Length: 377
Image (cartoon, rainbow, N blue to C red):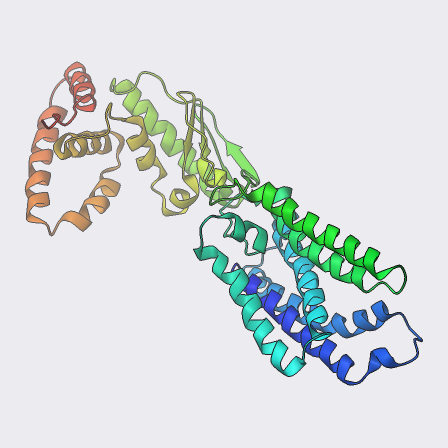
């Protein structure tokens, strides 16, 4: 949907400019006033604004219909802001059409409006993007803060209201010009000052996903649409942790494993008692238990020898019944002669370790997890 914002705004501005020029060419404003000029403008702009809303809303509506999904209230925040901005761009286009020939102004305004908004995605600093109404993509479980959608509305809305004030049929012209300039400048500066220090990602909140939980020791929570996978996955996970605990590989098991995927880009850290894992991708594929096994065997340093890493993972897979998942991940490397040689050595080492008593195996896995690459001088 992010590619539609600039197109919808340009559509509203260009067609409003054309309709405004048509009224000016027909000398509507020179006729005796029987209706308010605002009403005349609203009647002309209504189909234009409706068309721009169709440009903005029809593609995501079709996607939702195909997925048989109803939008949540939070998900409507950006589309509603885009609809308001379409109205503001329509007012801008109407004002341009009142002054310039429509045949010249309409195509120029269409291109200029589209370029001005769309190309803010490729410029630095970031604030032009935040104030333009070219909203970035939103991750799973993320919702933009109200201030994020208010900033572009403040800028475009301030300019639009200023143009409407200029059109007031009463009051001194100087006063109207001063008031319109004050409103427009306030909106522009307010939007700039609010967003000038924002990073690439504007203010967002995360975790806006309906969750469901099941089981205990550990309790497992995931997005509600994955609920059918949870009971079996929780049992497999509990078995993996129990086996590793009996083998002396872990000292404490987590109390809760929850889906960190719903946190979007604002990932919360895991603790010993609460593990945050990417369950949404792994639950349907059935490899969550393997991912838990990997998570339960953390290395003590960032640079780990390949032999130590593969040995620990194969040992854990053999102990917990995750050999199939381990081999699936090694298939991509099987064509590499070096990888084949490494895998033979890994399997030989793990076979030897598995033949040893429990105490020796526990000592071996702890020593392996503590192994780090030698520092290069």
